[in-house]
Image (cartoon, rainbow, N blue to C red):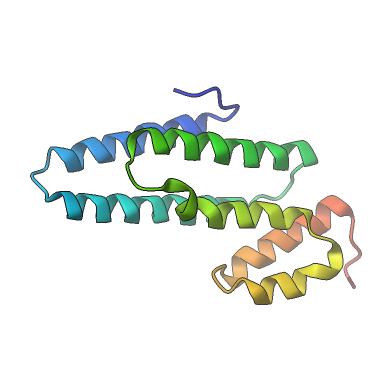
Length: 138
């Protein structure tokens, strides 16, 4: 399917393709199929963010692989979905990019992104803090 470093991307693509096929053969109107595919993309985005927010340790290389995996996933989904996939998964990219913010920007970033839950933001900050060796006070 893809040249992804992580098997979960291939699994997600396979499951989504199966979901699309079942919708296509379920006697459902095309508009409803598209709506359900759209919801499916939103669920993938939410699930990825939830998973990423629970990561406890990660190297810079690992964070780069997260971005690469996301691009492979977007490209793969785009092959069998007529909808524009990228805007639906933009939220995941936004979350991954937050790993690279300077220490002083996280409070502002959290306020500017109410689409993420408190737990997701805390998870992100805890990961960055442990990887960059921030002091507890900071």
